[in-house]
Length: 105
Image 1 (spheres, rainbow, N blue to C red):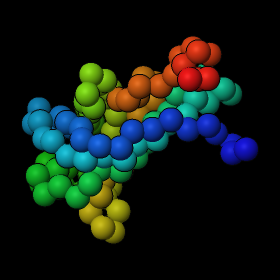
Image 2: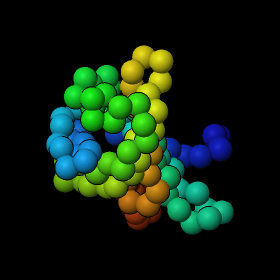
Image 3: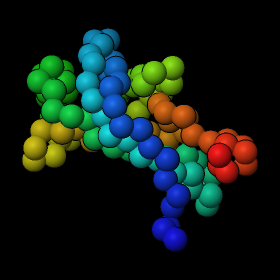
Image 4: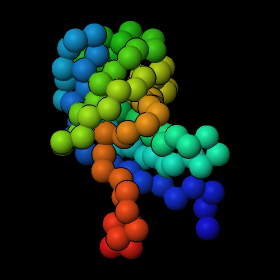
């Protein structure tokens, strides 16, 4: 058993940074932290030249939309391959099970 049972999403998403929308690919994971009661999600954004110009290698507030799910979070510095990290707390931009039936499905 792992420390956290993780949920996730991999695929296309729309990011809104400084009022500019751009479509990119993301790899996201998340888990509920029972100690503080928050859901934490995080991941990476595929290399995107437009995002690099907008963020300029700095932390930026971001809205992320994946399908019908939307969340706010933060972009942080890019990794050595130019992929920005993204993270947030609370409702993630992907579906998560909220009932026992969904967990057991």
